[in-house]
Image 1 (cartoon, helix red, strand yellow):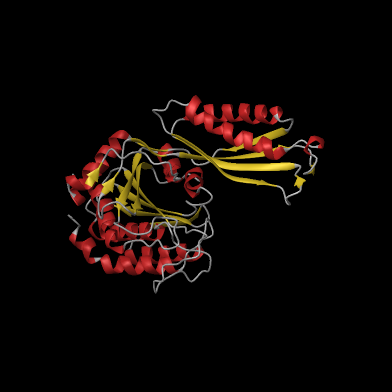
Image 2 (cartoon, helix red, strand yellow):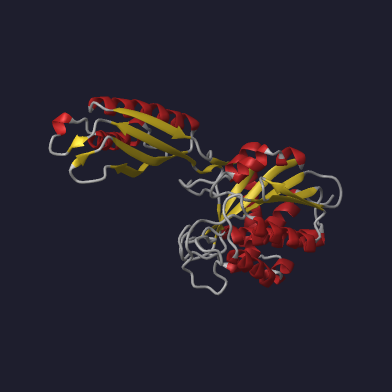
Length: 387
């Protein structure tokens, strides 16, 4: 690993920052303790500008380089998840029912480490915009920060982010041009029939049977309406109906998620779901309403910026430590909104074996922080070299 020596020296400090953040997890936009800690570190580091209160608790900090040049954006998310922690570490969550189960504490520590190095050395032209974002897990803080104008206000020309990847080899980078993560949409279906006694179904209009028909028919969208060479997931995750064994209920509720990479595929899914829900309900004598909620769009990497980021990653991890044709994953990420606003790239950083993200035993591997911070720093110095 070609870790920058100064950033390697910052390893213990990044670990301390990360473990403190791990102990004070906060959710969605409501992250005042986290934001205050980040701001205090930025004050100590000596960045040139700190702008807080963006998307409620988000922060953008500016480091000026030497001479004229563009502004490159580096983003870290910092919100946690509503999960009861089971790691047993001595810096475990002190907020019951909340934990950093996705490594956003580590992402923040990596960006703070890069910030400290860049503020000390200033070995680049132009500026760096450090984007510390709340509400990646719930609420779409990335979208809100873009809507509140950070790209134009700070004249950001390109933007990059890293996410840790448990299960991938330690210190390796993984990315791809084009879609790297999916759009995440939600569907709600309310089926209405006529309830009555379970012993007299002929006096009823059974929404349970209609709901089962709808769920089964939805699976044909993937198998019969979609080109099998593409990627599409439709998962029904909830069916709620009834209260007792001898009563046919009046209503049934169906809920699930749709994951796509392409807007045309997404539109096809909505159309077919509308047709299936209406048709299946009518076939059983019921009525049904579909509510389709559009969530995060797909995370789409710019081809040229991804190729550049992969070259920088290879300087840190070696050629063998970079995978630049990662199979896109069906998870979702609100960095997608920033990539819609500006070209850039999203990368995964392997942290070795351990519990996966969103698991109560997950814990960020502090040993990868200097690797991620070195990548961020090299990215800036390479993209905006001194003349």
